[in-house]
Length: 253
Image 1 (cartoon, rainbow, N blue to C red):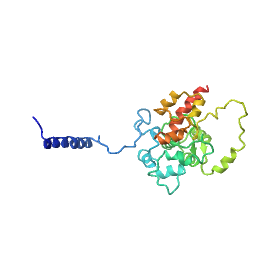
Image 2: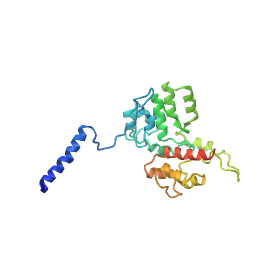
Image 3: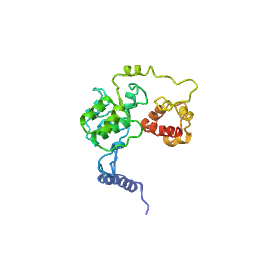
Image 4: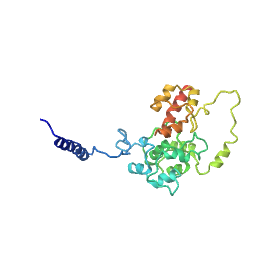
């Protein structure tokens, strides 16, 4: 049977919009991405949302919809100006907002910091990998909650960053002794910071193939700062930094 243009158009219309109607009824059709973290699959927290799955693209509003953490608490904890709308404030913007306020770029306040804060605030499991820093207001909020163990309090006290007074902290770094001329580069110097370039990674012995495996694509120009590359390609700097730092640390063993 040969179909004319009109019946054919009607059939295509029915298939297209009928399919949309069916998937909508089944809750399969979504016109925008959902920002809901995965849930714990086992343990005492099974069935609850996992803070470790919070992404840099999540806003404080998204976090509040999955975890019992008020938006105003998040704003206070991370020093977000009162006039800034917390509902639409993206977690990834913390790296830009606080990078100029911390005493050293190694003491970064970013996505991992938010994950850790939410986990402690909600009493949920969280595996700390490397050093995770929190602003002083966040630490005070957690201490006042009465949910922390002695070990957690000790860790936070050693990983607290004062982002309210950068000048006094910068003065404390003035007398830091310089590395003697001709000595080998120290472990502290081989720490990824916001201005670290891919060339520095190569100089430290990280293989280009490992860098590209972590990036999920070709390495850019060697002179490109890692933070700048992540921002331009929608990657979380804190996540990439942790993976690359692991490579560096393994080379130093």
